[in-house]
Image 1 (cartoon, rainbow, N blue to C red):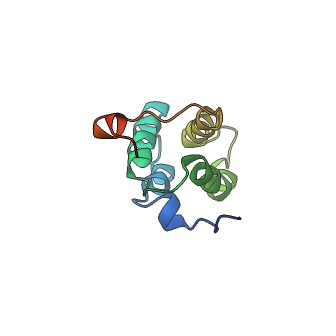
Image 2: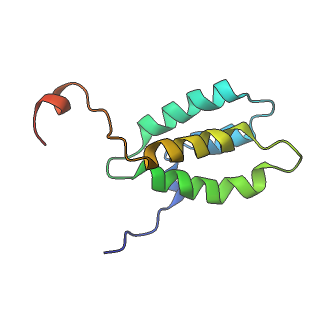
Image 3: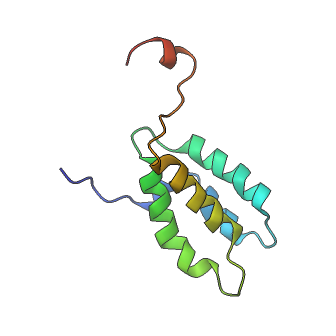
Length: 100
């Protein structure tokens, strides 16, 4: 069964990624911090890798007007590669102790 297409409200519910692309002079450290906040704000059931790919398709073509790509593009690529590697998600607290 095919999953329904993502919409921007699901992929970036707090518009954190959108705003990061609007910040002039933003560095890799700030982008990583924003990425963590973004990942924690994803709605339940939204696949992070799918959302990252959606965001890359949307923002990456617009993000490199000069020679230097926007640092958030690199952070998103790293995030997609890390999660696509099949590593299990960490579950803490009650979720780790009680079968779901």
